[in-house]
Image (tube, rainbow over all chains, first blue to last red; front, side, top):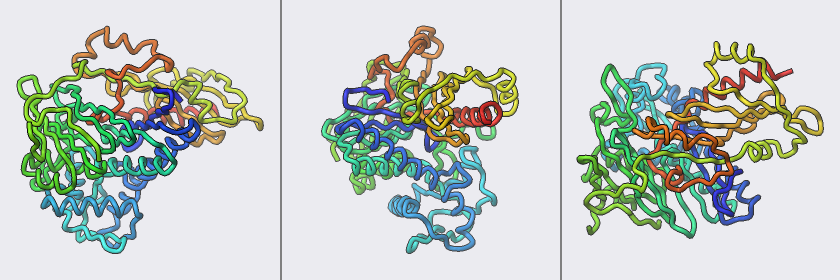
Length: 295
Length: 177
């Protein structure tokens, strides 16, 4: 495959509804090829289990049956759900993996068989690897599943001796290795721009750029970010990036920060993360970081 | 965790050197992708697909953006499979991808070969569009215009899925047997 640096392999495939790019370095050529293949295999497995877009995924089956009887779930699904419920609890519902119903109403996800009654994360019970819904609802892991897939790809590649690399799933990305890499952020909206964001050594970053991804809903534009407290799409031009120890947590925190702003500072710190809020202001981008750091 | 923000704690962010964002990345040459998908192959023979077959597929699964290039993959024991290079429109520019099928038409590999994308006013400028024509995998990739390490860029591959559906029909109707 095409090489960017002498000892680097770089490939791209489409998974999780986006372009997934994997780079690997710091090993023999054959090991790099095997490592990249293992990374894509890990992502493909998460895609098959957790996609909210595929009717035959494990998640789709869970959404169909868990309101009727407890369902045993895979380790992947259990981990992502446990993380999602932790974040829902810690954010008092600002993050809620049951807003899938609102997303399908807006055309971002296929509609469920039965229209969901008003439900929240509190209606989801996870115990001993089994999941039960207290009422019909639609779990949607879209973003955090993408982040989790990135984390799994990195784990698989490291296990095969890939010393440094990068996995980027449509902007949810994780970097590891000796040399720090510069990461840019693409902001959303009509002012969409490319800004140098951070240098990452071993860290994950995720970004939610809402202004850039809009879809018409009943004649009005709606972002794919739903406020679980109102079940309405958020009208925001802010771009939020979060750096965190794992990509799964980074992705979820972008949503919480986008909805709560500076009020999320303590939660961001509790997860060992750091957030940047970029707001378009007269043709430029105003920055704020959470938790606050010295200017 | 090791990181350092490049944006100020409070204040305005600097723009990247190229404020108009054009992203382009080349992942693999056709040759390399062929060898990767079929390491045991003895030959890749170009196949001409009848225009009528393509027209019929277009009616059922949408039009081809370009004429897909098709190869019959020969192995020690006859036809090993098929290798097809096709292009679809991403957000505004073309995505080149390669689909490898075994002899029965099962997907063996699906790789993006070239990803190109432009944003904002850039798409109206012929000079920007021009930079994408004639690009080959051997051309160097500029970091400033590269999609590596860009967070927040949800790169559209939706049309690749539609393209693959067309190519699977192409195999079923024009290649199999």
